Every structure is written in C-alpha cells, then in structure tokens.
Length: 404
Image 1 (tube, rainbow, N blue to C red):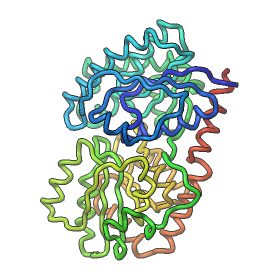
Image 2 (cartoon, rainbow, N blue to C red):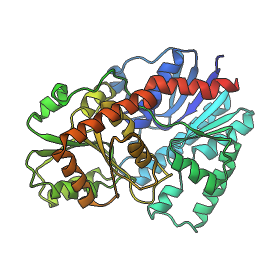
Image 3 (cartoon, helix red, strand yellow):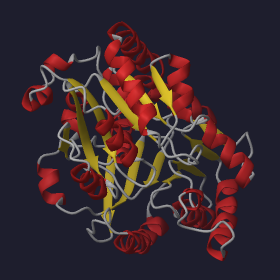
C-alpha cells in the first residue's frame, strides 16, 4: 500500500558528497520508483550550480527545496552554527505550508528533532526521527560541553520530549538503541533498528588491479591501507597517522586517506611533523566513483573514539563491506561496528586511540593473505545479505508500509 507523501528535513542532500546525503539520495531514488513521494527540505551548498550541472537527475517523485545560505561550515563551529540557524529560520515557513502526510527528520542539524517535533504537533502529522548522531551526548563525551551545564540539561529535556513525540525513533545500531532507551526513556516499541547501507550496489567486489584510482596512484606494487570518509570529531586521525609511522619499516605498505572534515588540516600537519612519506591524501570522492575509490585498497580502516559507542555509527563500514575488503576497526568494544565486524568475521577489532594496536593488526593482515582474503569474502557476503540497497528497500517497506 502506498506510504503517501513524506517531507524529509536534513542539512545536506544531493548533490552533496556527505555520506548522509549520498545514502538518502540512493534510498529515495529506489523508493520513489516504487511509489513513494518525497519532498526534501535541505540547506543550500556552495557551488550548487556547478555540482547540479554534473549531477544526474532525480526521480520525478522527489522534489528538493533548498533554503538558507550557501555557507561552508565544516571548518568552523561558529560558521556551522550560523548555517544551521539560517537553515532553521528559512525552513520553518516551508514546514508550515508544505503538503505532507508524514514528517521525517534527521539529527543534522543536531536540534532538528526538537524543532520538527513542534511542527509535527502543530500540524497534527506523524513524525519519525532518524538518529545519525546523538546530541548533546557526543559533545559531552568529547569534552566540549559539561553534562551538568544548563544548556546540556535543557537540551536533553527537549530531546526527551521530541523523541517521545515521534512514532518511530530510527537508530543505526544496537548500542544507539540502548543509549536512547537509557538516557531518554524512549520505549522499546518506538525504537526501530535500521542500519545504514551501502550507497552503491555491485554484483561482485572490484579487484584493486581494476580500480582506476589505484592505477592513477600507481599502487600496483603496494599494499594499500585506506581510510575513506569524514575526518571529524568522532574519528581519531592521530592514531591512524602514528600507526602509519610505526609501519614505516614496511616499504610496500602505503596509506591512502580520502575525505575531509574538522580534523583534516591537523592530521596533515601531524603527518608533516612525523615525516611520513607513506601517505597519499585525496579529497572526498563523488558518488559516481565511490565504488572504484573504495576498491583502491587491500585493508580498510574504520575509526571511532572511545566513549562514543551509541552516539554515532560510522557509515563508512557499509561501503567497505560492499567493496569486499578486510577491516581494521579501531572502535569501542561495545559499538555497533565492533559487533558487526566480529559477527561477520570480516576484520579485526582493536582498541581505539591505540596506534600500536592498529599497526599490529595491519601487520597481521599483511603477513597472512589467506586470512585477509577470507575476511574480504565474508565482508561482501554480509553486504549482500544485510546491507545492500535492495535489502534496505525491502526492510523499509516492511517497517513503514505495515502502518498504513
């Protein structure tokens, strides 16, 4: 039965290169082809006209309204706050008037659940919240905000109201479900476990020898270790760079670091200070070449800082599974990533922020190609059975269509 007309609110959307934008663009394209109508309210981005000129058209059942100002806030918390505030002000008028059967909101910007819950209540429309990152808990865990501060307590109180207003609170991992139930008293009946998925589909992993990027970088004789994605507050780039330093005695091991974010500049500075010559830096890769770029490695790295279990789930994991690569996951023990990697036997889990542990895991996979190839095979098998776009689409209809 058709779900109806959805309004989805998120700071980023197509043709942005952020993972959230890529994931929801692909999912909505698939769902629109099966009858869903989606109206996306998103922020303006710098260089939009150039990006749209090179982008493929969206399905006719997807409409996008861009509001706010094209401010790039990735390098400054102040600019990001201004970007979010202007977006909220501009989008509010749209939310009052836009036709919809249901509101969907992400946690990007972080205050969206609170803000959108008000409009859902005002218009007597059902609301579902997609929790990608839990705020202010992440800022508290990173030491940017005191748990006892008035701001933190007030924010948590409003979050509790918003989450308990929603019909569905969609979480990415079991650790996130536990946190929301414990911290915000969200009922188990409202929580929906809906893991992220790969932003691209493929029938088989692409060998590194067939990767265009690998050929461009001259990786034919190298053993490539790759980190691809955001280099932000949740990720420990310093530990990865110090692990690269510990592996300098293995001349064939090369690191390819792809992406950007708040820790990108400091990471590059540390690489210079450490005198590292085994690292290649690349910008975020467009959606059209993502499968190729993720194939440009033998091992993929996933990073999450200690104390962030339940607060975020690195979505790069699912693209790595689709690429069929063994994983070294430097993540908290109880995190969703650690659980998946262990359950699927597709990599090694080590303590976060431990360069020696990361380096030791990489050495082990370099020295044991049979184990690495078996992990790679298991990674792709997990993608096929649980995290492909087709599986995600089927999961979506089972969860939402049954309520109609």
